[in-house]
Length: 485
Ligand SMILES: Cc1cc2nc3c(=O)[nH]c(=O)nc-3n(C[C@H](O)[C@H](O)[C@H](O)COP(=O)(O)OP(=O)(O)OC[C@H]3O[C@@H](n4cnc5c(N)ncnc54)[C@H](O)[C@@H]3O)c2cc1C
Image 1 (cartoon, rainbow, N blue to C red):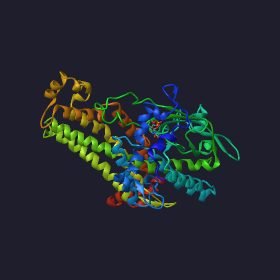
Image 2: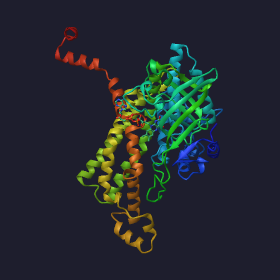
Image 3: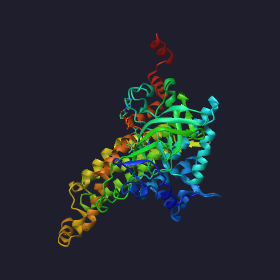
Image 4: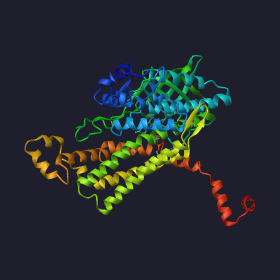
């Protein structure tokens, strides 16, 4: 089934406990700030019902379903998923909708990790994940994922924290289920999801067993409180902010106060050795999603930089050409790495196709490391008007409008159009949205260091050293013995 946009909106008025700026929100859909994020995310449902996007967004059959729920089984599946994510984000003005992407990444990661755990430990988690995935697919549910815990002192393990609730953990078990307590943070789209999937954020040791927990709950489940971030919550003029006036996500502090989870919805409960496997299984799918939704931002940066260089008559200047070339090389490298991660993906149990792990991390790392420099190039090309433009209202004023038109008209461009391009550039690289994109690039889907470690861990040092030995004429056994003696 494909969910209708109106059904989605109605479903969110379900008594969920959401706070915004210290006030309990009676209905998130009619809230001026949260409602904007909800309308933004609903692009998924608009696309699925639009014949123009049918082939991209829907898997046909007796019971058509959203392609987001399709389990990737080949390179082609990963690339279709990439294209769907990129198109949704393009329609979302460079902001990812996320209500299907992150949840399905979590379900694929859960399938991979629980299947392996059930086989090695005789647990029975995988059938529950499979059942939830089927229900979610058949109802086209909107999902959020809370993986990142508030974490307290990063140098201590979960069970060593002075605040025992710094990581979500099991506080009670019964024949019916488990009760969980603790605080997650940065949870995107929780206010506008229908279900929340909870995953461990790191590997755990035996002493952390109660913290090795994964489950899913409806957002209105008793004891769950969402404290919404007000970032990008101010009203914005749509002409001055053509992207961020319409599009945003909302993150929450996500507090579990002895929340009850029936066993059917528990996917991990105390198997500490599996927590790290599960955390990683999710992020490898999720980093592929991450780079897929970065592509529209890269396209927007390139197009805007080139347009403004032309409007300002500087597109032939050597340093502008160099900046534009850097942008092209950066964007093409990210895209090529993502393609390569799909091309060199691998079939894994139970019937999934996973992107190539070092390459998908390399794609995310390269994107994250290069974005600040890319913003710098666009800022350089666009000039100071990024932060000093006249207001949209000035262009409507009978006296000011002709004055501004004359002042800003330029090479093959009206003053009004040049200002539209400036407003777009400003929204992209000199606004609160720009800061959001930069921090998102560095931290979301894992910090840069996490990606670096995964890339280097996957590198074959033995092969490299063997080649160096061969070139140098060193006998491997002699050296190994020498080192160990
Ligand atoms: C906009 C946005 C949306 C997000 N959406 C979601 C979401 O939907 N769901 C979700 O679960 N998460 C989400 N995240 C969280 C994201 O995955 C985290 O921000 C990321 O994992 C980093 O965690 P942190 O923010 O707590 O920073 P920290 O972990 O505090 O990292 C800060 C620095 O400390 C370093 N560091 C951390 N721990 C250690 C250690 N033990 N030893 C050495 N160095 C360390 C890091 O490498 C980094 O350099 C989102 C984040 C952002 C910014």
